[in-house]
Length: 253
Image (cartoon, rainbow, N blue to C red; front, top):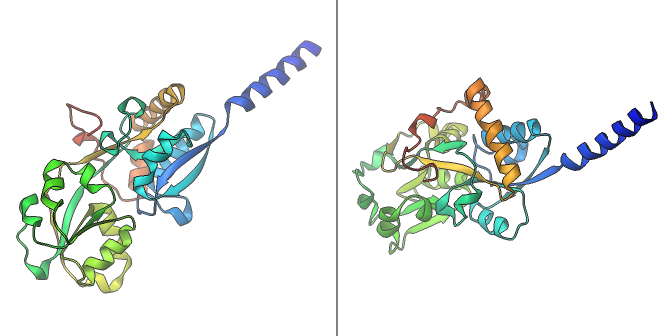
């Protein structure tokens, strides 16, 4: 009996060491993926559920999108969300892909812009999401590099405001993020907008420096995808499942 009690105590202590609170870096508010004021959104809910099944808890740290790679390099956090090879992180620490964004250029229909190619953005005022020039490829980077009216903005609700209030010609962001913020404002609902399909999908992973933690994350993530819990969470946030668009040649671009 004394041996059993001793064994249980040792087991309990070992479990408490393994289970821990993980510091997870999350980009600033970008519903429906991240709703920072509620500590929710598709990405937050998914990763919270995954690390919970791994036996841990999640402690979110909200930062501007471009800060995540810096925090990872300084070993200040356990996980950085929404990362890929374009974000100046070592590809060896990237998890399997867990979310795919569909970035688009958006303009007001009343402006009658013809934007069939990235080069058509030249000469227009453009606001893109933070790190867009790194993520959206060399053609986009070269087309906007010398444009004085091009800026990148961390707050994507501001992007939508700037477009709908006629302060900018075009914005570049994920389609679902745009729809969310446009539908939030009744005034914007009356204005027709156009999606210009200029970009391939953007595949994102979680950056996890600890190899054991990363392997467990991948195992649970794929379990979620296979058993339908991933799709149920997509349904909750009215998101399309774009995993079938995952490029065959690369999991990280």
